[in-house]
Image 1 (cartoon, rainbow, N blue to C red):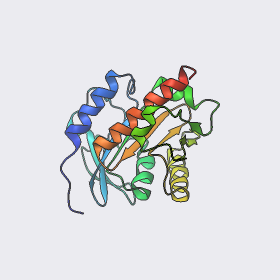
Image 2 (cartoon, rainbow, N blue to C red):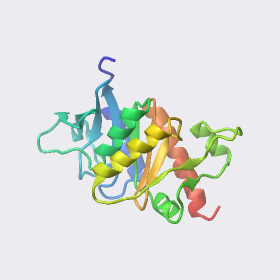
Image 3 (cartoon, rainbow, N blue to C red):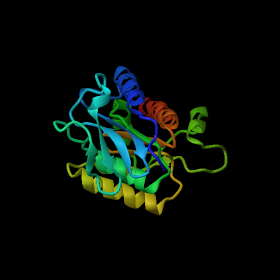
Length: 200
């Protein structure tokens, strides 16, 4: 796979959209998209996602997480390990992670989070064929690398998962083969989690 079109401007726009929707409060959340077969662009740590510019992304290696390109005064998002686990195990072009109130509420007392089978579930590729509709819930703790390892282990053991997961009391990460597909999956999951948060 050769270098892909630069995805950073598209991710900047998604950052603003998510910020305006309340899915990326303060400096929360992170966005990534594949640069080539061995690396991806990801948001730098500690920045408002509503004010991103293309230089706020770093290119990191999928295999080892090494920074390959980007401003020296930036460091990769703390959740880079989770993104790496997804790129290593899935056919993925982009990963989107937010911190919505609904995701935090839905992750409490549920493991896994079983999504309601309403029309929106079809946006995740689920039809009335018995396809599982459960999102895995991962324990949140300061050692994000260990969360990434848990995600990698789960995805290797479950080769056809729903294209999303939740870290408890934290938020959703959704992915897709393209940025547009990842966005569709993220929006669908947030819609379904909002139903759960409202007692559906």
